[in-house]
Length: 253
Image (tube, rainbow, N blue to C red; front, side, top):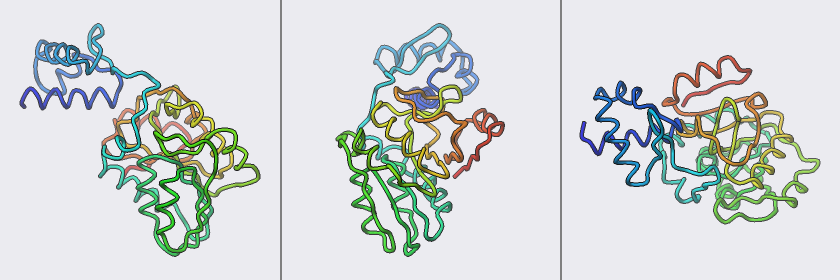
């Protein structure tokens, strides 16, 4: 394996886990710990990670939030598979909520036509896409528009949710942690998302494997309050085993 390829894979592993150990990377890539230390030092000099004793940690603040366009270009095939799996949970005549995000946008595109659905969303780009799906009545939750994510959030959004309930709510996430639950960088957006889940009979989180082990600024919900997590098959087996002990369904796409 070429050095640049190995370093790219190290960064992917770091993004997935948040923290990596030199010894683990040595076994993973079948190279010496000295080689891994050289890789980590080089990546640290480039500002791509932070060196810690025995390994490295991700260089990213919990408030860091990529734009929708940046997220939409990452892990596209995984997100499409997750969306197709999520669409299998939708039945004719349902009232569903689809939150903002790049993975949930793929769900919008995967909704089968002519199911007679009422689909609620707080994302302007999702609402526009939903108008192209036959047999869907589209309801948009108003509020303060966050340009970075196209999400409508805040007091007006929460007020619009009063006395409205959903069969299923599909939300995305920037981080999923066994200890800290489901998180996203924006406090306002997390508060609105938590309110959405309080109005739903079934709560489904869509996230590709890179979001596991990550903690960001705003907590949406504990994992104990989630019914289903849908992710791709590259999830760390340790997370899959841990979820088996929780009262939630893990669907792999």
